[in-house]
Image (cartoon, rainbow, N blue to C red; front, side):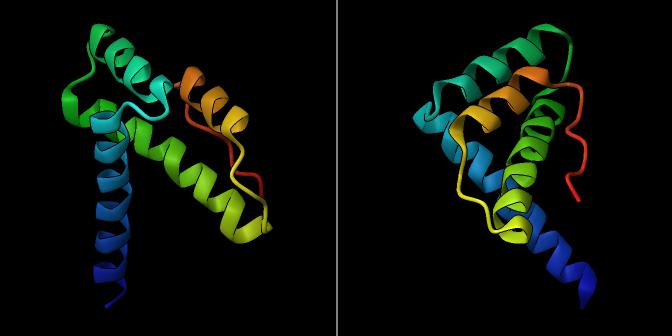
Length: 88
């Protein structure tokens, strides 16, 4: 059961990435995707790295009861492929 929850959550994150890429909103997502692909990351790997930024921002919202912070999200995108550290 827990594995199914994880898979659904992972798919929701990737769906969010795909939606942001399709709409180019915020535009930094498209820029990050193109930069990562130019650095040799595959489509899937680039999307998963961006997904880590989405998950990090979601973590801040859900666990720390923070509000969505575009500047923090963009900073996380710009630091990829370095993954964000946990803010636990």
